[in-house]
Image 1 (tube, rainbow, N blue to C red):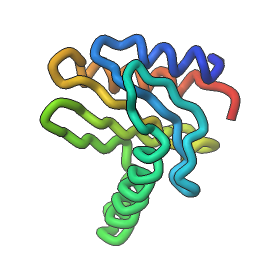
Image 2 (cartoon, rainbow, N blue to C red; image 1 turned 180 degrees about the vertical axis):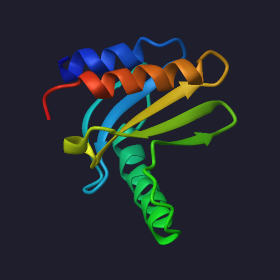
Image 3 (cartoon, rainbow, N blue to C red; image 1 turned 30 degrees about the vertical axis):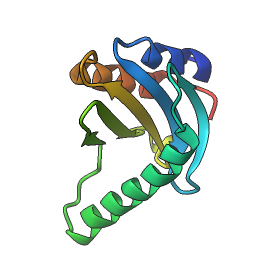
Image 4 (cartoon, one colour; image 1 turned 120 degrees about the vertical axis):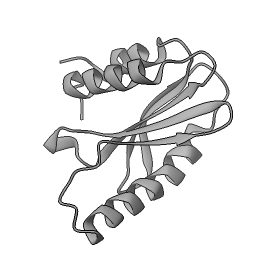
Length: 123
């Protein structure tokens, strides 16, 4: 298992990574975060907690019987990637990653977050 700081640094080391946070979407609280640039992760975490809750409600109301893996928000200059933990004991947490569209690789970011989710320890 990897510690939280090392795990966040691994995500932030990705080319084009701007910021990363681990968020409890039930409370909207940021549990840990790192950033390469000025970015209000506390506010972003709270707002995106509502996005996650809305998407989970929609999937439930539609009766899809599926889990939400991630949510991608594409902006002019950034990707905002929200990945809900796949680990049953951490299902109320999501990883929030901001990636510069011009420099980042979205596919690689998804793979690294998946790996970090499987290895992270400390919650």
